[in-house]
Image (cartoon, rainbow, N blue to C red):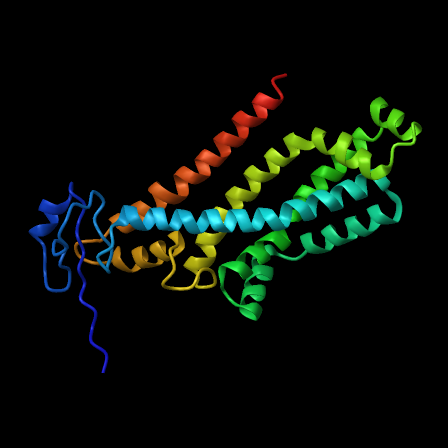
Length: 258
């Protein structure tokens, strides 16, 4: 027979005196020793510590997804924009087909089929997030290939592979910045949403989505355990999304001051 888990919350420093007056057997809010500026969760772990662990999970997802989506989108976009013809038709058909599938349904079906480990989550995100990058790179390549320096390189007999790598690729930095900002923001939000609905990161892992799941349950208590929600939302998700957007805007302005 399983033994009920004892709740051992510690309230934030600013709220501890107020909640101590309402402490009950069902809601012990001051049993965890130590200094916890934002309190602890149901297991006695510091909220700020959990936010930092969740940040590590998000960074792993970002890295894994970018390693899949950026090479795939860059190669297909360059090939479609530079060579045109059947290659362009095939690439357009491919990303139009993927775009027609709702990404959320695709990711859910993919994770149900293969599992919910970080590897499969990264692969699912990567297979759905390269489309916009490929479309942007294709459009920019179609414009760049008509420039004088590209025409001169082709007339001089420079191989197509060298033109792609040495002449076209360096002129696509602003596309990468835009795509990185949009993709990273989407991944941060998608991970939290999928985990919140029970499809993303497995229970027991470090995740902001799991913190939100716990917060949803504990917010209805009396007194409400609000600090887990605040930690995940306002120390985790919101600052990272805001920082990514500001970083992308500033870097783009630095590369294109005009």
